Image (cartoon, rainbow, N blue to C red; front, top):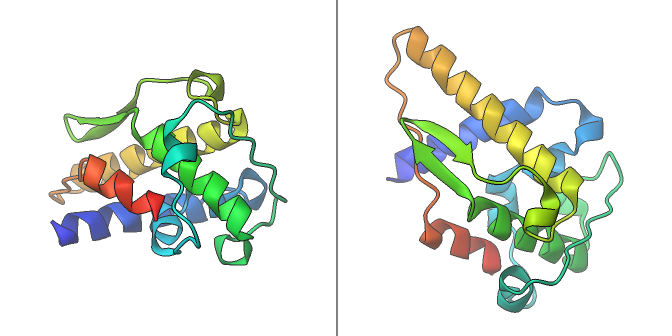
Length: 147
């Protein structure tokens, strides 16, 4: 299972590196986001309906964010990944806009784009004969974002 998550993280990182910096590479690096601890848990922010507004500079890096901004991004990721399913080894998102989950639309669009690029990369590797199995986004994995 750990190998599958490592593959998923690698795919997200590769797709993030292919995105222009102005689109917030830092936002879509889920591995780095989950790895950075918070001073206080964000369960309530992530799970209630309060609007999450994330205003970050275009060149923002995750490791340079304040605890407040990191908390907002983690809460947004938690909400977003609750709407992602793995179907036939492809990630499908059942929302189209940030307002559907009360999150800044730019953040949601960055996540949607990253998952699309991950799907495309996995498809191209499969066409080359590699057996790629993308991991599901489980509640246990999402819960790592709350800490």
